[in-house]
Length: 118
Image 1 (cartoon, rainbow, N blue to C red):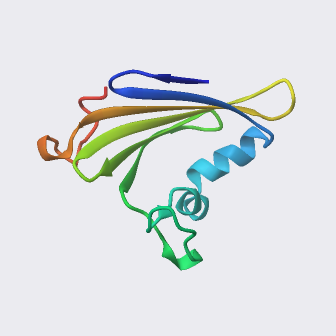
Image 2: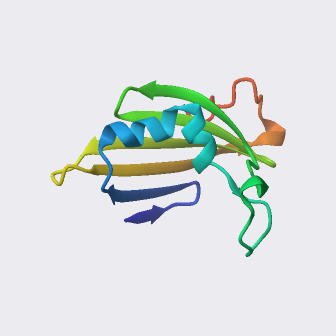
């Protein structure tokens, strides 16, 4: 399911992975660095070393095995992404993502970027 407003996008997925595996993917640096990369070139299959992070990521909070929040600085925008995890009836995970635009990076104090999101 996808919901979109002027300042946020809400996505919900049903995953076959156990909540503990999803939690690890969201919080352990070696896994986070793998799934938060995007291709350097547009519309071409990159080589493994061509994948580069194109934004700055900072942990805001983590509620073990249920929720993690990151702030993301991407060019001139700062946003907050909240990942929520819960076990579903099939033994997998209901995985929700809320991506909210917090502010323009040019107008923000990147040392404390989430005042506008609180």
